[in-house]
Length: 195
Image (tube, rainbow, N blue to C red; front, side, top):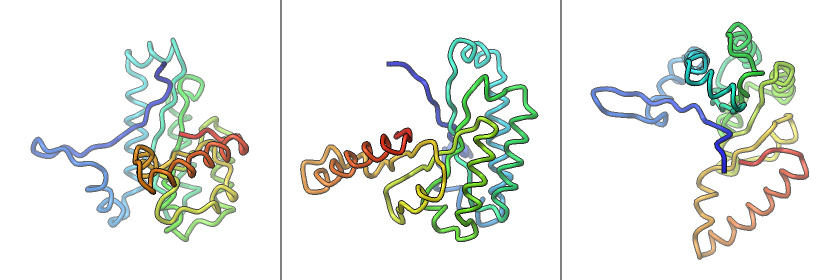
């Protein structure tokens, strides 16, 4: 019954039209601007958290703020190190608000640059700096348990497509229910948060 977690979302507003990331992120990735975009989002999140409103809110309760991070960088570890440096240089420490870097599973699998060792090093770097690491959009398209085995994630976020099937009375609903029951048990056994 309490709000404990937020997700930082970005939207592009042009001429009174609002565009979701499905529209503008492919261009950001195509032109190699993912790292700059991640930095921009993180800097603005930290700036927002330093506002009077959020300083008051976070003094009452420690909220978690999830931020999507693109794994399409050429040097993913160095990119994460740069983001950690931004956090550490800010006056918003991880003792004020929980930060959770989310990596979309589908993009991670498609990006063959990153091996399992790099992922584990990234997880260790984040954990050493009190930043959580989550796998986003788990359970669709190129879904694989390989990444759960390879990396020390703190949580997995089940893809909306799987969750939306739960209300169906047909075959897809029955299958979605069984999958969700299995994921709940899997997350509990692995001591992962499940969202």
